[in-house]
Length: 327
Image (cartoon, rainbow, N blue to C red; front, side, top):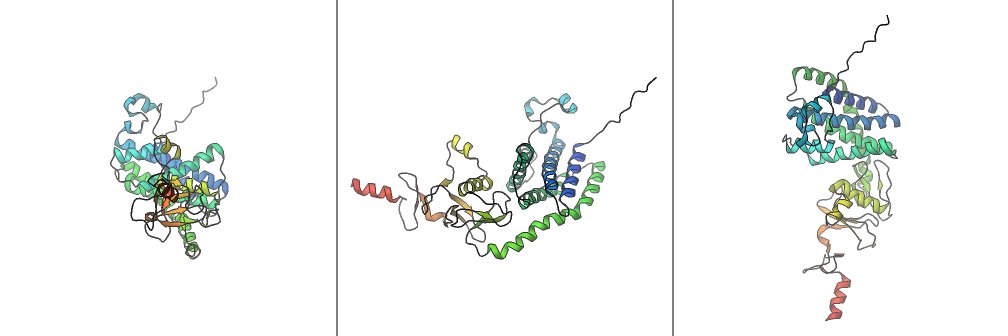
């Protein structure tokens, strides 16, 4: 009589899964990562973030991790037959429901690595090694802090042992990975100090995007070259957290305008320039930069106009000419 094969049940808790992904990320990024290493580092990092955010939510209450909390079913949850919240939804719930003091900048890091992961997973990805490494390092820095501040405190005794084992193993390698980005930025400091306008790169999020009159904004860190209008649009999306389609659909104003200097539709408001105080207007085509107070929308036609010498309501030259003719 033939014996039936026996199978061992495989049990992976959410915490174990998240830590396993973290372990894999650090292994892929250690030493001199290949393109394949970087690919799996991104995929596994996003999975680690997603799982560990949800693990912390479940500790609050099992319903908080279900996509539609109002229709949560305990039986389906326990069998894994349910749709869970996305990573960003989980992040927002940790703030709103659990009261965790999470930073909005960290939410952007998750969103950035999520976009990178989606391109990699579904469409293929064309990016420099430096861009991927920087994006990954920033998100990894968030995850490392999140684990120590919000996962380790309150963990069960058996979970603490699991946490200690993985965290001890990856700690040394993690420091090396994060220091690589810091070291490269220090190398670039003398070069960037000579440039008039350097802003955050929408791709790698390092303050290394050189904007000048060449019409080709270029990142000194990740080597990404941009078409000016794409750089302006992507900058607004990355730093302001806005989506052009959603803004216009809701009747809002997309903060990219026609430049008063070169007339290209690449003038952005609210730009932070490296080593300069306050926010500025920056044109990603001609490199013009002025204080926010020096430009404003014409009160008659809405066009951006120079207000540096005006005392009254801003008005562009065309509208002034029309007013004079009508008088």
